[in-house]
Image 1 (cartoon, rainbow, N blue to C red):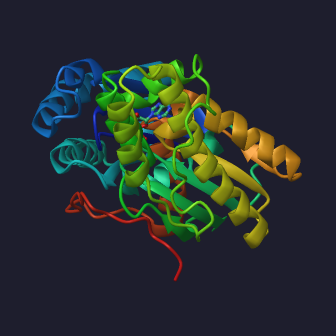
Image 2: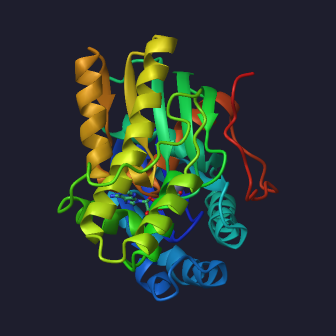
Length: 334
Ligand code: KG4
Ligand code: ZN
């Protein structure tokens, strides 16, 4: 019998539920995005997000169960993201998952959102060989992680200021491209020249940490000084600088740790240039690139169910008085 996990994700502005068998076989994955609701404010408004989660949570869970064709009694466990994220949003998913676990008499599993992103590649590729370098790039995080085994992570570096997705969103807002900025810059960059403007590559050859706030400031200064500049060139040159730094460090990390491949994870992993460059460098270095489909890179509950499957196997169920933690860290080896 397959082990079926119901995953629930509400850490930011996506209300999501999914049923996954044995940690990789996606039976259903339902994502209700609030992008349209938040776009008019230019970013996620926490209180608005929480209220939208309350409205959508139960219908989204019901749809995930129906699409998967499973009954509550078929489930091995109910897993939910418990952090990091917006606290009001997290509480909706955690409370829902614990209530369902109690009523259905199933174990509850607490999932770290960052660990869930690391598992997105496992949903689509059964041949992942460890150790792997995972570049986790989202709206709130930019991390270079060495994955040695299930639940065995070493954090090699992270951003010292803005996350990569945050830089995309801020630059897009400045350029008047709307929210979320990542997809907008990605699309506009395709029409521009990535070599047009030599934006700075913060910390490119300096360790594994990242810094993107200087790049953002540099874009703003350049546009102020050159008001007639082609916005597509700005988008393409900005993207080139971000991807250059991310890929250079990931490549060095693979060489220095002896990793067998490169995984991309998080919303920014949906970026076309980053995806192409990851494939190119892995091929040049004789290594593998594991690039989840775009829908599995951005927030979803299938990755929560996958991580929940492995966490349940290693740690067993979590207590029903488990809370949510907005600043939860990735559990790492010391
Ligand atoms: O992982 P995610 O869905 O939510 C967080 O956990 O943060 O990531 C959202 C971030 C946003 O900053 C968004 O602008 C960025 O991912 N993003 C992209 C692209 N699609 C989404 N950034 C660059 N290129 C994209 N195609
Ligand atoms: Zn995320």
